[in-house]
Image (cartoon, rainbow, N blue to C red; front, side, top):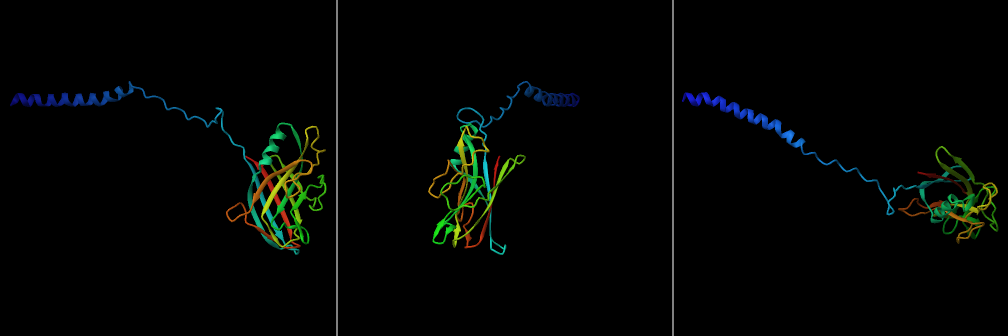
Length: 236
């Protein structure tokens, strides 16, 4: 009995020591097996193996329709998209293949909101210096403002409605000249009629159609009302 009692504490001490050493040794064993470093995330790349970074062109529209007394009748605030023709023009300008001309704004519907009584046509608004051929409609009152800090171009102009209808289609346009022309000498207008024809080249830069789920709902107008338009084209 005495032998068991004297050996009992020693046995317990050895057991405690072995457990302690076991706890201390376990991390060391783990440290001897280094884990593989985490693989860094691969950047997005396109099919050609390069980085994939998008450049977006934004067209922000504000349309206010005012009565002859200046009161506000309608207001729309929406975004529209770069048209395929606009993308083509950008490539041509950046490549030095063409020189940009003058800006225009188009407002249309069914029937179109401008033109003489019984002869509806789209409202085409042009810059004062625009060279427009064979177009009896379209005031030359578009003002172009450039903001290089915000990287944006602001177009603004007005038209007087002559039809009882709704604006359901809008677009901006930009004319173009040969690469040998200087920007100040290029006065060509862009899209100037509803069937896709142009004066001097160029076409729709941004474009949008109204719909209940689209960028904007139709804008009702009546004869004599003033349509005020502001378009901000920006890049991000």
